[in-house]
Image (cartoon, one colour):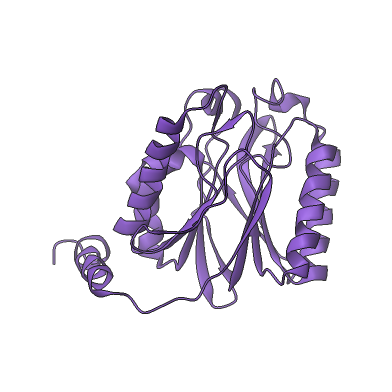
Length: 260
């Protein structure tokens, strides 16, 4: 499957974000990308960085943008995964929507909330798994990468690829934080023997990578940070090597069949 991740400077201007996303979808479609992923809150901006509060969002306009992305997914025969904010009554959820080419969509709500997330959002409860062709794919959002239990859930679901949407930036260049978060991603890929695709916003300084990791945590592709970029990779699922087979066998014993 040809997969893509588009990193760009997410803002609080939804119209501006949407125009960038639309152009990225068109570009990816020309490249025959089947699955395209955008950062956390890519459509809306992330509060309070880009907007003071989710209350400030024009949800009627946002709904029209969601409908437009669904139409593009069908027209271009592409799976689009985009970070956004959804409203239920008077509560807001940090969300990722999968717009599928069959006209259906899947929604995942961020569950690991702390700091600004806890100030602005309610935690969700969905498992975050969808099918794309013959692949089972899991979704997680940003801070959840620090908690192995969120990814052990996906291991139990038997995902072939896990996606992590980030909005992780700093006001100054912070390579140590970048490498720390990268190490978390590597670990999630290794312990769950699962390809892992990440995407992040880029402004002011990117502190989590947009990258693709294999089942042993090796980086297959990683564009330069702090630069708008469409990363594309033609992912072919190879047979597990000796170490990967071992990790899966032990995980099956203690995660899938605990006590065996």
